[in-house]
Length: 161
Image (cartoon, rainbow, N blue to C red; front, side):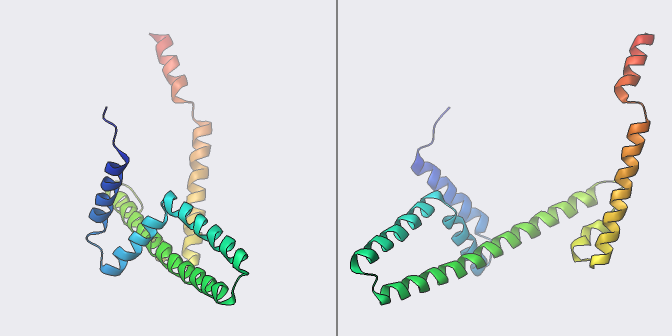
């Protein structure tokens, strides 16, 4: 088994990211890459060191008001960008997951296709579907409790032979 060098792994991750984001429009690609790179452990460590360094240097220099203002503005801007990046990527991933689930529902015989667009249904429709599913599950549980188990049937058949 060949072990990959860290540089090779980084290159492979970079190629995968470029391949996955190549078809996205420019803004989506940028937000996806921001979210990807900021989720790396090395970035978290760098941010911790930057904040600690800023606090130490600020304490030594007496926290000049211009530095405090610049730090607060920077933190606010970075937070705002990250909120949009995370929201955008999670929204895309959730939409993709929803389309995959819809495809699975379509592929299953006997599946209730009315559930495919349930996320866009009014609240009362969702509550009705939830109640119907709860009733179905309760009926299934009751049937399973009242029916003899399949393993017991197999034991009886084996004893007859």
